[in-house]
Amino acid sequence: MEKLRQIQKIPFLIDEEHENGSVKDTGKLYLQRMIVSGLLSVFLLFIIIYTLPKTILSVTSLLEYSIIVSLVLFLIILLVRYFVILFLAYLYVNEYTFLEENNFSPFVSIIVPVFNEAKVLKLSLQSLLDLNYRDYEIIIVNDGSTDNTKEIAESFVGYMEGKFNPIKISLINKENGGKATALNVGIQYSTADFVLCMDGDSQLSPDSLKRAVRHFKDHEIGAVAGNVKVFNRKRFLTDLQALEYIEGLNMARSAQSFIRAVNIIPGPIGLFRKNVIIQAGYYSSDTFAEDADLTLKILAKGWKIYYEPRAISFTEAPSSFQQLLKQRYRWTRGIIQSIRKHKRLLVNPTINFRNTVILWSMFYEALIWPPMNIAAHLFFIIAALVFGFSSLIIFWWIGLALLDFLSALYCIVVEKEEVRLLPYTIIYRMFFILVIDICKAMSTTEEFLGIKMTWGKLERTGA
Image (cartoon, rainbow, N blue to C red; front, side, top):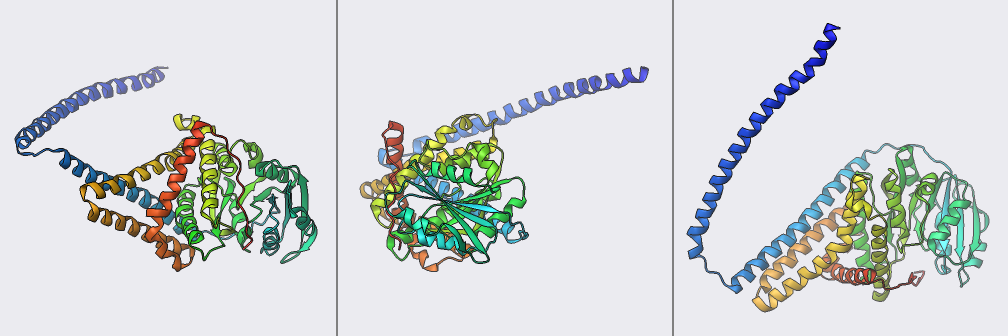
């Protein structure tokens, strides 16, 4: 009993001694800080008093200095953003290089939602029959198409010859309700534990399913994002989009994958545990970016999301300027709608800190960066015209082009892509991205004004 009392007293005595000592140390520390701060303040005040009479202040000088400072700050923000993404992407590539292979090959259902995809459906389904995988099925969901999509899909129904064995192809016809409802119908019809969701115009590479599904050997991974590439290239606008997908999208996904937190699983190819989609409440139709919304819901449930660069989906990019702006208009409004659905995570990181970081990065890319980029361009153009900073603007443009060139070179080497895309970096940042950011700013304004919009399906060429 006596020993117990002594043991009980020890923490109190130690805490009291520690507390008294810390109070004395803290007092000394505060005194030291006050003395140092006071001396520094006197020194700075002396410099100001001494140099102020010798300083020539004018409106022109202030504007010139502000232009230079703004130019430097803009470049610093770009550099920090790029190098952080590049560093994380490099770590991911290094990790991926030494990733161990496994033979995990469960039964998978491939869900193909289609709406007026007659021009491209045959090619899409044929690419699925050419997969280097044995145990899978294909479920086509016809979302009320008005062309001959249904007839083309019916010609594939049954058991079709795959690369290794016959593959079962099913067709579900439903009234038009949107891509999200079509995917949900296919997922509910599936009896597999894993589902691959894609777009009706996408064509998968032969190894895509085999490469993606192996990551589910890790029970913490709930979904795997694939690599989207543009297949209708050799045109000015589509080549620029091909470069954008490689540098702007895939590099970011690589960086996010290093922390297992890809923020958007692309619509053209995403592989999921079926129970994860059920936990997240399936796809929702209340946004124009159902893939971004579902991704955020999966992350909110604590699941990890990985990026598989060799699970490739080739998609048809908009070949006209009008179609491109229509696509980006919908993407931007859909992402903003998804952020608003999860806005409580923006202000309360205690709910899910990782999701808070992801949402703030999406918030920055969608709402802050576009107007900042537009304002910077306008600011520097005015500075060149009014204050004669044309030579400085040229160096600024060269700096941006060089930055994009180095980033694009890294991404093209890593993905073994076409080197001929590199020259596009000369105009990529200054013109293409600027136009996209203007479109984003306009769609953001309309979203907050509550202006109604429709889905805006892209016209397919089947090229």
